[in-house]
Image (cartoon, rainbow, N blue to C red; front, side, top):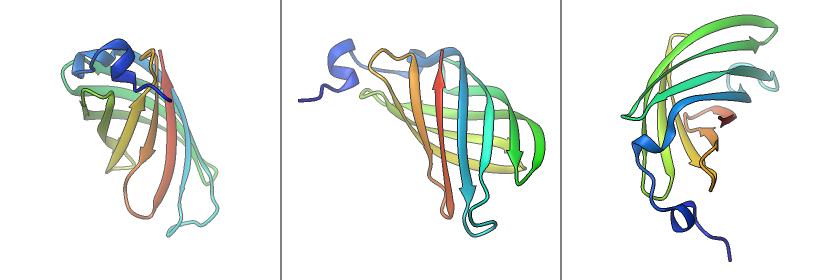
Length: 123
């Protein structure tokens, strides 16, 4: 039987992910450019109160870019949450994320229709 993150270490809250986490990710937008991979590397700085900032370097269809990120996040007691990011090519993106039991890593999946992207972040 798998234990939930909240079961073994207590419950999570916004303050659980305070500080800097680096991330890697990949994805594509099927409707725009089927099969074209996008790569992203950067960091998130969580404030422990529901806001975050960050920076990323991206390769999209051979175009290299650097972007400032800003957004908000929620974190439920079971250590699952949502992230809304602005600053990505002028649009807002929506993500679900899941913290690992040790709370040092998280896994994200983009929840916007027509998009496929995943990211992993860690301390």
